Length: 182
Image (tube, rainbow, N blue to C red; front, top):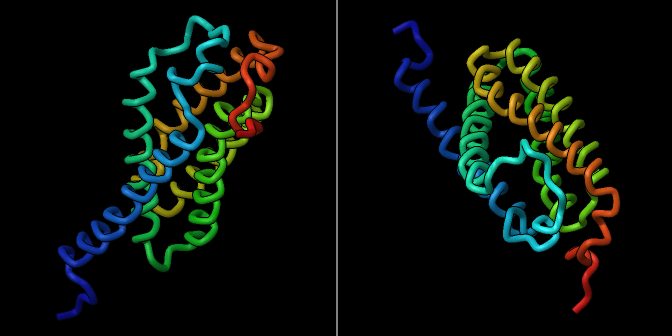
């Protein structure tokens, strides 16, 4: 036998990575949303003027779990690519952009910082784009899994910008949860 690992063993290795990365990223997304009270149930968000392109609340509840699933699978592909050149940098940058992604909801929904949230969204888009370019050098499939996320980030940046422009005094509409004292 000249193979180090069979194809079945390699598939199982990827599956083990995916069984870790997908639930972990989904869980972190849920935690970020919960601690920031994100969504249409948020009194501050409900009081904002929203652009016509704002999707219904259910769209976010459908889109984000799918995007987190795809991101988790993409990360699993890269984690599985042992020995690939640039793998460590790609993983590190993925984690940085993920951290920024998870910080966006608390910045926007809890702190009511529309301007900071817009610039953070642009930074996430930039970091995710670079991450995707690094992924394509390692595994094309991982980069393809990131494309829906990049498309959503473009849309989210436009939406965030329009909300920022339409609501110059947004931070004063309702006391931010992050500063509220009991």
